[in-house]
Image (cartoon, rainbow, N blue to C red; front, side):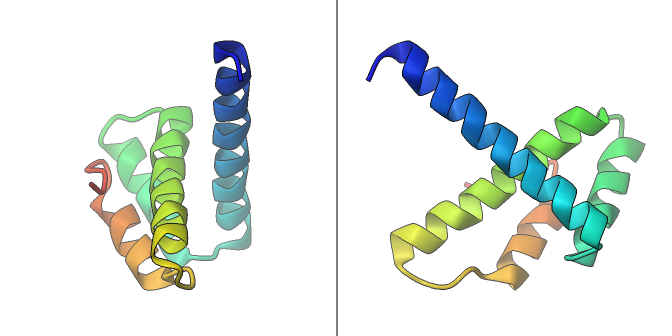
Length: 89
């Protein structure tokens, strides 16, 4: 795999995660998503930057889920969202 392929894959993954966040906002589920977006906007983050931060939290939860071979933990995901702009480890 070349560096370009890797960058393309990362860009695609980021785009997919940001779209997942947009879908959550549209559906109003989890409710914390809109509250977190509002909070980040209030403290000066642009919408696009806020969505990327939220996508990083989603990616973190998915990675943990796969690493630990467990179901998606919605409560933990929401808590990490609420902790933004501080990112999970």
